[in-house]
Amino acid sequence: MAKAARSNPGDTVVVAQGLTRIFKDFWMRDRVRAVDNLTFEIRPHEVFGLLGPNGSGKSTTIKMILGLLRPTKGRIAVFGKPPSDVATKKRIGYLPEESYLYGYLNARETLDYYAKLFGIPPKTRTKRIDELLEMVGLSRAQHRPVHEYSKGMQRRIGLAQALINDPDFLILDEPTTGLDPIGTRQVKDLIKRLGERGKTVLLSSHLLADVEDVVDRMVILYGGKKREEGTCDDLLMSRTRSTVEIDAADEALVSEIDEIIRAKTHGERGVIRVSHPRQTLEEKFLDIVEQARAERVESSGADQGEVAAFLSGPAEGEHLIESLVEAGDDDALPPPEIESPDEDKQESAARDVLADLVAPDEPPQEPTAQPEGARKEAPNQDRDAKPRREAPPPKDAAAVDQDVIGSLLDGADDAERQT
Image (tube, rainbow, N blue to C red; front, side):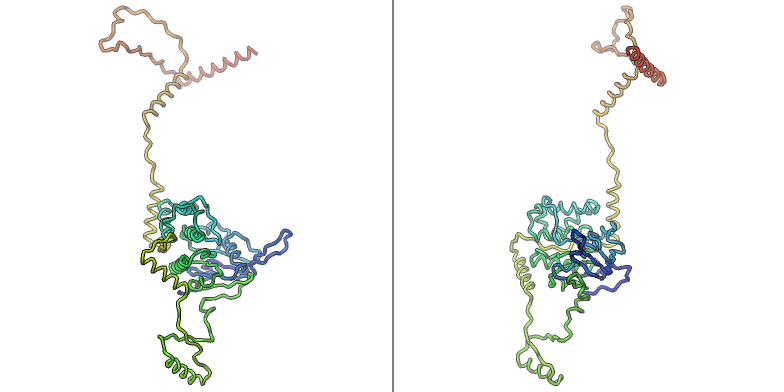
């Protein structure tokens, strides 16, 4: 794997100087020194390994990077800001050692919940969920409640939620815990691809075989202190032996090679061991699985998917189009409200009641005598129609107000007389 280029200190993702964390007891006495004077830096676009046995301070260091714990001594910065800065949280994805998920939610609802926390628009949210479920192999089990998942399946959905916001800095604490060899290989391949595509990854593990193939640089901890730091080649390369690999050779050829080496070194060196290379148990296991899949053997476990497309980093033009589409959806005007006939009738009735309350009371008028000729019905008038009541002439608003005020004053005077 290509080594990350050294960057300026101001461009580093994480910088820790003299980092120390001491846990105290009830009487404020030093109980555990979890991290002791730790100094390191994580550069952009590299896969950084934080290694060590259980209890060496890996999880405590991660919690200080996330701002969940405050260091007792020393300083730490993430993206050039304190870990407590809220703005940096949107750029970080975190998979804890134990996946704390809501058991009554299914996989799709779980990812949708975390995507809403980051404020991801609906269309982008749906697309990312589909891609992540396919990537972690849970498309067929996406509608099952999470509490029915095995530990390995919960780790898969936990990895998906850590990637839902397309983070610049991904923190994975024991990501392969509970995974079968297939899932372990998928996680390792995913970490490699994320590193190749510009993501910065912090990988914490005590399983050294899972880390050796993917990290660019590493720090090995023990007792909270840094014991070694460097690249895999610097730390693992043997300086005392050399290996020459050739095609299968018989004993005669090996003897001739041994004589040549001894002649060149005056008998000080020779062939130490001749062996035939063999594949690892992991490679053998994966070969069997691939052969079974080629034969279309059914399995109820998780599927194998490709890396989600949005994690590969779309082109700048695609980002622009996506942002314009999302902005158009958010700024769209709501449809015009259409009033129903029932609402019109209710408003008309309310106006009539209001007019009756405001209008002054008038004494009933006695009917006047009319001549017999006037009682004849008009030729186009309906005989069953009721006589139309004439509306009172509109009064001045000021006069109406005076009448109302006067009635209130009269009522107050009557009340005083009674008392």
